[in-house]
Image 1 (cartoon, rainbow, N blue to C red):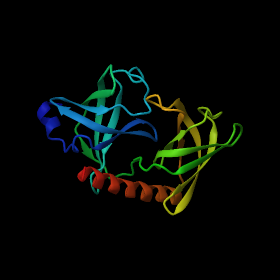
Image 2 (cartoon, one colour):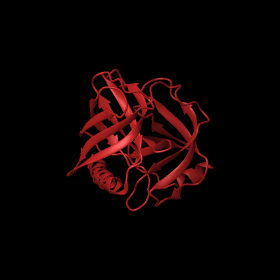
Image 3 (cartoon, rainbow, N blue to C red):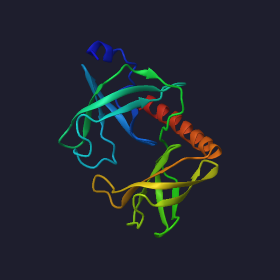
Image 4 (cartoon, rainbow, N blue to C red):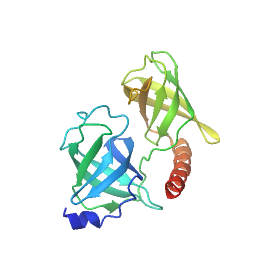
Length: 216
């Protein structure tokens, strides 16, 4: 794509939230850092530890959520900054498109998450960092026996109701930036009534984020 085509994309404001689709049902929240000529840059997700986790050439979608639609930009990673704060530089590989299909947007934070392994492992309790219809990320302050691949039942209070989610541990990593504890990512397929509860919860969070950004 040319620089003029990239400039014509309806980008959000610099610093606004964007989402990186790095796996099936696994999206990471980021923010737009710059649009510069034929490329743009985003903040490396907090879960990604170190510049070598993804190498240049990796392709994925980037999207953001203005009112009543989502704008999706297929992109290719071309560079990762070598020093903190880590930034990823990307180039679009196809024109931006509006996509009104259900997308797994993450949002919300602060709720208690209770995790029980279905086969083995000790129960764990964490704090929600974000959630989508396809997964959640939480912070656990104590080491956990849970590991990637474990089947887990998670319970989390979302607004006025508790969601009960049966899923699988995708990743357990040390918390970034020297923080104590671990970050755990759980993926799941929410049944429709729970998916609706999550959508309402995330939608409320999106409204709050837009208001916060507008008045920042």
